[in-house]
Image (tube, rainbow, N blue to C red; front, side, top):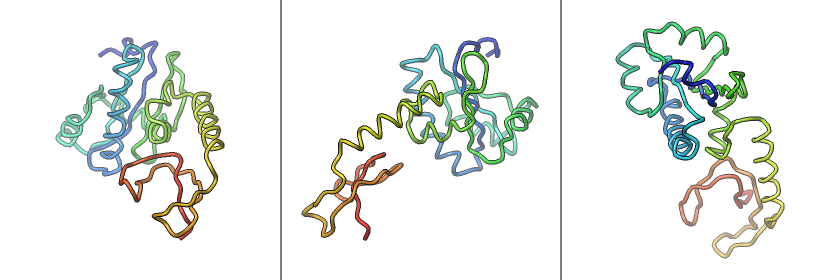
Length: 179
């Protein structure tokens, strides 16, 4: 795919490697977001792997878990991009807007926190999501009593959690006790 074919799209540059367990975990999360957005906004969104794998074999294994584009392993542009964006740790995700300008150097946080809802991955979109979350939290009771728990449960904001009762995963709002 020519770079010119990415013009006018929001592009995520995903810096990662197969040897890194956090990268493999984030790849699963990013793939969910990618597939969701490709179904709804496919014409204006793309991810490109900028591999930091140690060798071509590792790169090829890494690619099998990813539905998006990748800069070829032999292409020195990978190293240039790591230097340009000052990538110190992986996984990292940089978003470039449709105009070709950087819109976020912290795309990993956006995807981890808000998933596909963060699209188009701008600071203003994150502010809107945060405001909606605050409004949602304000509408919830600040504490509750539960017959299954001996302490009063207080409303907390949590990035992610697993419910003690139903064992389902959740995010953002949870009731928990200090004990």
